[in-house]
Image (cartoon, rainbow, N blue to C red; front, side, top):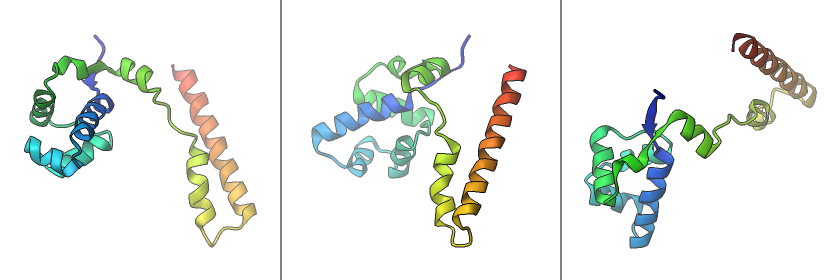
Amino acid sequence: MSQTTVDVVGLHAALDAARQGRGWSWRQLARELGLSASTMSRLANGQKPDVDAFATMVAWLQMDANKFIITEEQRRERYELEEPDLVAQLAPLLRARRDLDEKDIDHLQELIRSAVRHFEADRSREG
């Protein structure tokens, strides 16, 4: 059996639609649900709520909890969860460094690309 998980993105979207429909802030919604604002913030950041918070959210939404239970495979397919390109993510950080010139940055980016290719090749041999 595939591992199941909470569809955090879907749950957050359902709460957001209900929140917006009432003209509430996230803080107001948290207060209405009897949850902390940090619980709502963690949900927005893709972290799963604890069981009690999950139950509170789906009960308040008046939705079947099963609507928000999906397999990892469904989650990846539904949200096309692929890691962004590592070099593209790191480039702004490298360029912000005052101790690196353009040549240094280019060299570091090529080293990172090479390492990523190596990791991917290792994974394909293992899998």
